[in-house]
Length: 264
Image (cartoon, rainbow, N blue to C red; front, side, top):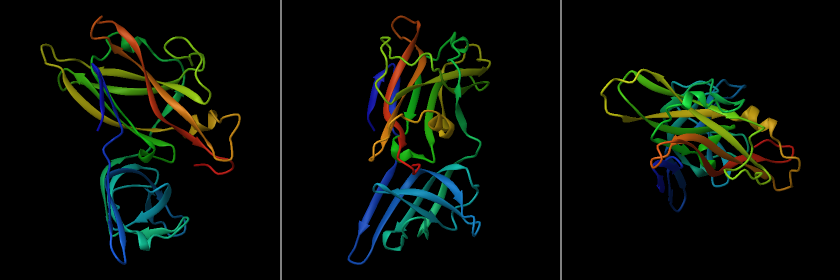
């Protein structure tokens, strides 16, 4: 895991472990705590999960896919025999599958509104954002990890994602490159800090549904091989040197894919 420290720590990508075992007659692949989206087969009512195999998708199910519902996002662990995977939309049986964590629907969405700076009069001094790479997103759902310093058990935080069409410029006031958008992330403190308590980090996973946002920002031109709309994230933090609130721009390197005719 690579870290870039700016007092504000930014971590790219959740830890996902993949392995494969190749034999003379079989090939298996497994993953631990990998992100997925739960769907239901309309013909059978069976729940299944999407996984990424190379650059493609496969769909798996098993008796361990429990305590989830269609539309949920989840972290799962699994092992599958690649020789048993069907192509296309075939749902294949995993050798084992287990659910590590569930993120029930509805998920957060990107609101069309300016960033609410009022809630950041006392910005967080420490924020960690885990930005999902393309292996951590399915059906326009992205999994993030946020961490903030809080004082006492009565203090918490919420996260608001928003898009301001009138504020789509970089930190120097320059226009963004083509097929680039900025999403504002506001960290809202809730509850009351415990007087005299030492600030301690609290981590919270957040799933965001980018479906509507993606549909509202379709590129004017989509080449035959598709195009990626890069998503930057902008949020407020306390500069450790000046002790003043400043905007930070995270160029995540990930985005929303667009292809002709077929939605990805």
